[in-house]
Length: 173
Ligand code: PNS
Image (cartoon, rainbow, N blue to C red; front, side, top):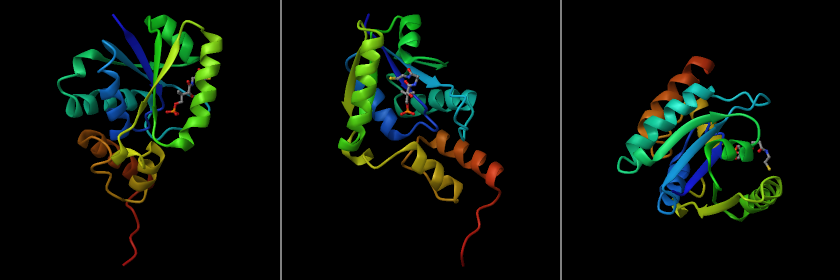
């Protein structure tokens, strides 16, 4: 059985992530979406909310594939999470050339740390090439609508979290 890990912050999961996940399920039997608990970052969604939104978003967006997807939090090194989960592959998405440099560095470093583990890249669909979790966070923070950028249940969750944190958005009349 070919098992891969798809690590990331997923704050929140976007349709770009969903697209990469769908492509990876064409190659791997099982994909574990591994959600980084990073004590240095203050995420908009805490790790439990990120795990919950990934589970609901994948069920909505990829209903026929969701039974081959696991979602787990992890902390520490991605390669250690791979070893723990029995995964020999790391999945990452590339949206544009600008992603490449950092991803290349990370892939080489991970390979150095764990020579038996390879990183496999999938090109994100062109229509999601402009999407990022950070832009989605900014949009919802200012009262914008993230529909079409994240699965519907994720949109509802991030909008309610943003409203609770920021209060009602101020609109210019
Ligand atoms: O969604 P992101 O923020 O681009 O994901 C980055 C992530 C989680 C893949 C990366 O920061 C990571 O692997 N962190 C775990 C710590 C680690 O293994 N660092 C060494 C990577 S070379």
